[in-house]
Length: 467
Image (tube, rainbow, N blue to C red; front, side):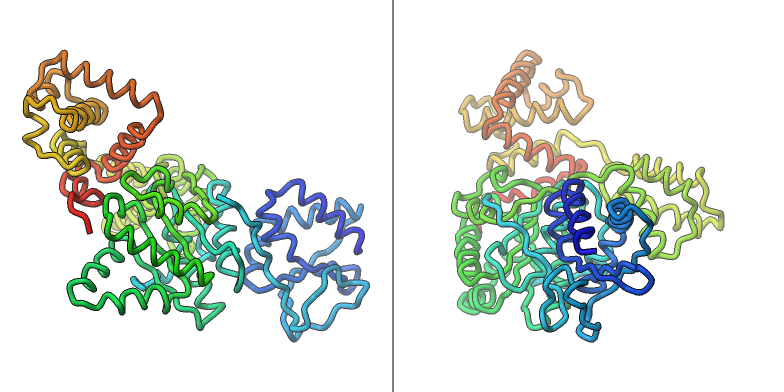
């Protein structure tokens, strides 16, 4: 059996990504039970559920193929009360307390709000889009000591960054109850710091985050763009936590290098740990997410409806949830059954909810970002500090509205030819893929995420005052 299990692991190592193998296969302990039964021991119940759900069939098939015969497999949690394995059957060295240590992830160079009760590892649906991020987060949460204690999660909004970040918090609190976990957004941190300045309690603020924090879950770090005072304080706080080997998880819609107006020290802090991206889920993952939510909510909904929602609602996970809740709510209010026609109605409603992005929304956002006034955009000024924002605003107006060049030009008090020239200038500079391209990409994403709501688009991330 020892030789068979070694061959099984060798084959699985070729078929499974390295990080997944390290996390889910390497810790397994194989033994022999009654009537030629193979017993696979897992470190804990959570581990057992996950490895069975994602790799159970693959492991069992590989085991039978290598053995050349059908072998019954039993999965079991190895607890301290479990009978000891004989030397011949124990294929790993098991610690004296009966617990198999969870693996450490390989090193790579590169307080606050309440945690949501449903944002746990158990309720996170893993797919190819999120497998590495999930494994990295779980590895960080599971180990008690280590030298790679920082993780930076980035993705577009609504893809699971907050879920994974808070899942780490839940797991640590359950596994290491004495740990102090602080979950805050970057905006929370800034507001708390500002309040401490005004109330002359800055010492207590620093003590809280530098001496009384074991795990920092910091969300939406891109909010710090342009907040020079907050950036300096956070940088010092992170240095203190890192020197004390504390755990830190950052989340953002952007890579550290893509966040404009962020000082080099903070960029370095964000980049010193493992960086992992969460991509949009594919159809299979979207369907799995819907099925899990339907099961958790005890919703009676057919596979046909779920499959339709999964195929049509492709933006993000939040949109999926909106679709499922919309279907169930409409069926309840109308007293009808959940069928495909109802699903089509809900999908049509979701598609029409997104408001068109307006010229004013674009102008407000650009003004806040470049620290210019609305009057500047329509003035005759040829100063570069005014011309550049004006050209960007024109470009975004053409890209995100249905207005003609003439209408856009008139809105900025410019002729058609001037507007056309602005389009060409911006497009050419974007192709160079330099800092300017990142600025335009940042503004584009803000417009898409705020769906034309001028107030939120102009104020959410880009205030023109520094904290």
